[in-house]
Image 1 (tube, rainbow, N blue to C red):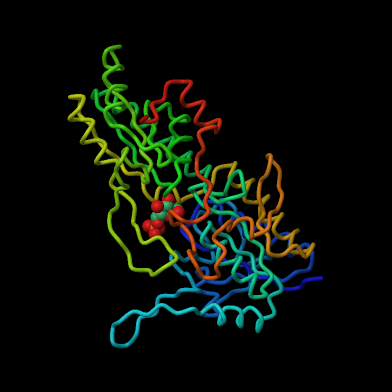
Image 2: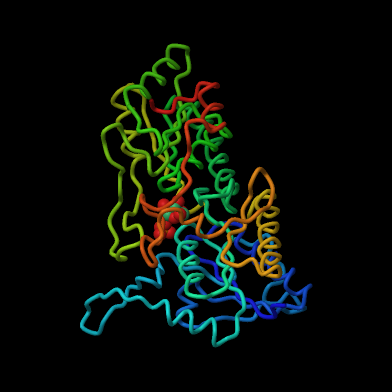
Length: 381
Ligand code: F6P
C-alpha cells in the first residue's frame, strides 16, 4: 500500500487545476496517504521544492475548488530532459537534468508522481516512467488536444469564456454593421474555435485542420449582406492558416529542442483586414488570449476535474502506474502513457506542444464539424 505521493501541475494554467489537486488530495487523505505538491511543475521537481498539502483546518488546500490558477504553481517550457541553463558568460546551454529529478523523487520517498498537464507534460511523464518512477498523468489543457482522451480539463471553461465573448461581439457587431473577428487559442488544434463558434452562433470558424480560402469566407459574409444581415461574427483559431500559406506567429522563442518555439498569434488581425478589403464592411479583431485560461472553472470543469483527480488517486492505489486517466466513451478509464506518446518514442525528444507531437486534432468526421456545416457555419473551405 502506498503512503506518500506528490502532484505537479505543468504547462499553461487552466481553470480546474485546483479541482484536480483537491480530488487527488481528498481521496489520498481518506485512504491514509500523505500528499505533497511540487512548486511550479517540473521546475519544482528539479529544484526539489515541494509543500505538504492538506485540507485540514487552516490547511493550504482549503476552499480551492472554485479557485483559478494552481495553488502549487505551474511552469511552461520546463523540459527537464533538455533544460535551458544560462551560464555565467551569458551563453545558453541545454542539459538533460532528468536524473536529478529521479533522485529527488526517490530521496523523498514519493511512491507516485501525478503529472497534471498536456501532451508535453505527459511525454516527460512517460520518459520518467521509463526511468523507474511511478507516474500517473491527468490530461490538462484548454486546447483539448491530448491524445487518447475525449476531453481535457480546462477546455470547457475556455469554450465558455469564448462563447461569452462571442455573445458580446454579436451585439456590438450588429449595432455597427461590422465584421467581428475573435481570435481564440488552441495551438495546432481547432477545438476551442469550433465548439465556441457553435455555442456562440458564429457565422465562420477557421481552424488549423482546414486551411482557409479567404475569398470563400468573404462570399459567405457577402451572401449574408444580400439577405440584409450587415454584420458577421468570425472565430479564428490562433493556429489557422490560409490554403497554401503558413501559420501566423508573434515571434520565436529559444527554449531549445523538444518544445514549441513558435509564439502563435496575429491571424485574427490578418483575417479582419482581408475581410474588410474584400467585403467593404468594417472589421474589428479581438484577441481573447489568457482570459480563456484564468478564473473560476465552469460546473462541468469542476466535476470533470474532480472525477479525474479521484480516478488518478485510485489508479495509484491499484498500482496502475505509467498511465493517464482519460475519458473514453464518456466514462473514466485509463490508457498507458506509451499509447499517449504514440510514435514520439525517443526519451527526451519532442516534449510537446509542437506540430510534430502526438496530439488529438479535429477530424472531418467529428460531430462538431458535421454540426457546424449543417447549420451553415463557414469553415473556410
Ligand atoms: O497550450 C495552452 C495555450 O494557452 C495555447 O492555447 C497557447 O497557444 C499557449 O498556451 C500560450 O502559451 P504561453 O503561456 O507560453 O504564452
